[in-house]
Image 1 (cartoon, rainbow, N blue to C red):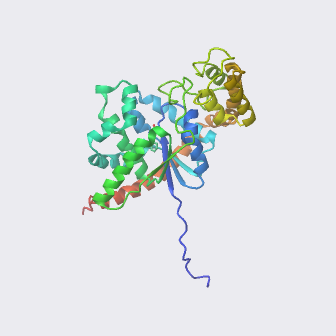
Image 2 (tube, rainbow, N blue to C red):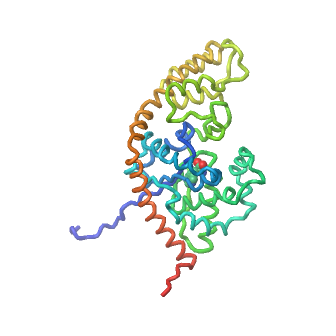
Image 3 (cartoon, rainbow, N blue to C red):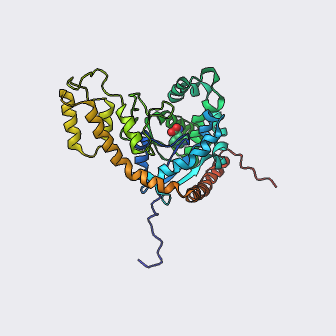
Length: 345
Ligand code: TRP
């Protein structure tokens, strides 16, 4: 082979991974097990885009946009503190990518109102927030905007918590219909759900969430973690430490399994809990220790990061510039496929 011969093997293109969070508050352990952990692991393997979904957050915070402004830096600090590397992952602000809004407008034609009303996550949220007749067009259509978030970057892999699966399903339908109508432009995404698809809250509710106020935050200090764990919901049928308790489905043991690296200790606690030879207090104290051990390095890094706001802003502006180039390229392809790529003289 001469040195001039062109290589026959094309360089391997990395698949794209896209995901995001609403900047409505700092991130909690539910975000970590559902999605953050996967993002950190996979940022080497995939070309990663992480979107801070301020436009989506506005759909239920439009009366208090200042909340989002405050929280954007907090969310970035959480990302960096858990190990998301801005050199590998493009972190950007949704509202600074107008192509996403533009795409969403075209996608709205491909989705019926009836379909939007059937989205189980949206239904849950309407219920939880007591929106019912007050539900706005913006809120009801946010899954379509989310489809635009994902497809603007031709995202193939979407690491999310289980509650987001209906959004990915909606995106798959839009991609299918768009490609059928206008030509193969969009890429079909796949959800990647974390090991514990939905982390139970400290109140024993199905999902840790800011709205339910049942979360342990990555930024909570050691004392707050202790207070939260000590009032955690356990086995409601167990009155005395000598009553045999239930381990399976018990929030304290779900957390032990996920965060306590001392497996021996966890197995010992489980065995004694089942027999009624350990009190809730001991189980909780050991959980406090394990959680603080997990959170200590994250908190330390986070504090350092928050001290340099300029650096955070730089990461966001660099990321947004990179993201804009990609979204603009998709937009160009979409408009061409839709025959609305007018070239006026
Ligand atoms: N809906 C997601 C949440 O509430 C946030 C989000 C917005 C998102 N756009 C996205 C997640 C695109 C994955 C892909 O957590």
